[in-house]
Image (cartoon, rainbow, N blue to C red; front, top):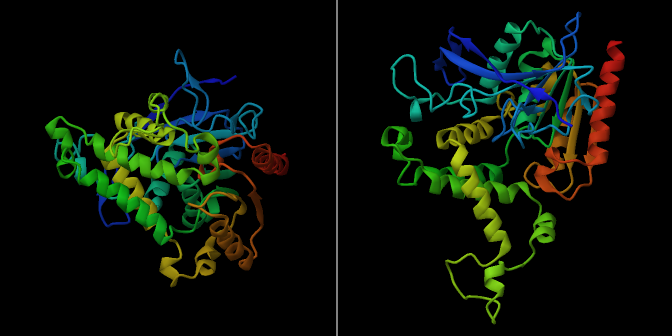
Length: 380
């Protein structure tokens, strides 16, 4: 049974310097908290979200069915990240379309909607903004920072940007940077959006339209990469749509009709995504993924890059995750061990692909539960 939660928002007037050299001021950050900050203020856990998630990490909204947070199976009373022990914070990243200031909001310097003029964001920029919000909440050191995928990149970056503020980092299904293949997938998705006739150079708000065709394709491309071949075969195989199987031949022999169940599923996911996600946000977040590379400033030497980290680490990967393969997590583990950091690593043999980090697997949740129990025990 999920608990009832309420979103909050904080306004920040002071400019936030960005990695690009630009800055942003007069922005809002949406967030949620679960549990209570203890008297010692040493039980706070920051959860960082991935591409299409938000600050709504756990719990439900009052009066709304099916409003569980995106990691509700992981966070809550008695769950692996136990909110009876920890004060958990979820923050919506700048540039998102779920409450925090983003491209669809008004630029205070011009009085016009940002659109394509919203500044380019990086993982490091998000971490800096999160640090400001934690300061406002009176949280000056985190018991842990945790995230999966892009959220895991943020967790890793926290240990490098604010090493003294993080005691533990939990990095799930992530990587120290994107491979060329991953950047390529992101670029194809972005091209689908920017070449949509309704995109209007990112200023589609002024035209009263949405580039939904491009967003649909972008989501379909992304969704394929989040699933494993085994899962797609198990769920869909070569099954035809019911309307198709009514034909005696089994096929309609069309190059444009939806013939297979997997096609129907992808179109459904694309249609749903295009109705709630912002196109400029998609461009911003995928580009932030591309840019993340803490080793770049050290000539590609990840060991030197991670030397700044002081926290203890838990890394988790999944065997069928080909987008953020276990080998990428092992790169981080190796670099941390070479710096003599305390590291735990779990490689889970799960069939679900990249999406496994969001799903229930007793081995996965058991590892996370055990790790957070050790954190809580160390504080006692």
